[in-house]
Image (cartoon, rainbow, N blue to C red):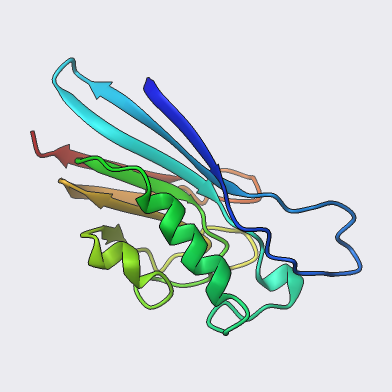
Length: 156
């Protein structure tokens, strides 16, 4: 790993009775050398839990947070590139919620299978400069989010 970076997302300012602490979230980036040949920009993020705060993910209230998330993800450049994480956005695809990422050239591994035991699809994988070969949601893993196991062919 090299060139590690963490960017804190905009404080949403969302309030709820249960929220006794701030919900600071962000994106971590690192350059990864794969097989001593290909350099990949790997990013992982965790987003504010919109639903838990009663915020519709497609609303104008969510838009500043989503725009800031996209800007922070796009601040680091690299190809090929892999972005994954708990987006806390319940959708098969993020294209309508985070269009800037797709305009930048991201593709998406889409699953219609929930990534949480509660039946939501919060976890997503996006990529540039690679080909998605296969992907599964590991529903047998008992945790609050199921792992997504994906295989990629990296364009070198």
